[in-house]
Length: 116
Image (tube, rainbow, N blue to C red):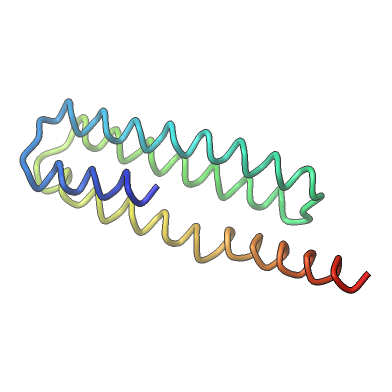
């Protein structure tokens, strides 16, 4: 996901057209949709107790991406430029919060499996 965000930031810096920026943000959205489906399927298989909360976080992240896409479609240049930072912040917060909790669950599960 960060590589998509970096591509977006580079495109903004190079003055790419709004159409190109929208296409890049759609790639971010598409990637997140696929990632979400795969990650939630894994959580279901592992009976992750935080799945419902994680789904809500994914809903929030997808809503944020949709909001930023709308801003780029309708906004002036400063808003287009600040979108990259907002997108990166949203993603990093997801990594540091819900994804970190899931990784802790995985680590504990592996540790328990090794002891059994």
